[in-house]
Image (cartoon, rainbow, N blue to C red):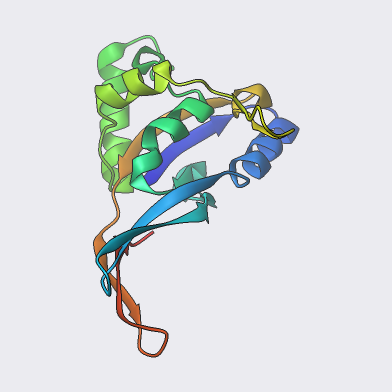
Length: 166
């Protein structure tokens, strides 16, 4: 899954956001075609610069609501930065078309708003925090899903895995 967005804020805070966003790991589910069992690996979220100064965050599709939660994308009413609603919708639609992505469905905003942005692991001294404390504003553009296909290695994994091609 790819999430496209713009970041606004002062330079040190944007750099902090970029560093922290790349420190998150997500469960990546794959089906081992040799035994038809689901395997879960951890994969690091990838933050990439995109065109027009935007950013692209790549992660497994099952983590969309959690990604939106930790980035503070929980209220669809905050998407517009201008006063005219029609103009906002037209700009976002144009940007989505340019980036080849689609609008984020409303249900994901509602689910993200219900999740806790930070997690404390009671048994350990570790925890995971959100990215809202970075002092930046995120303006989401949209999402794009990855293809699901078979990936194999001729020697190590000849039957392969059915997986999201991140």
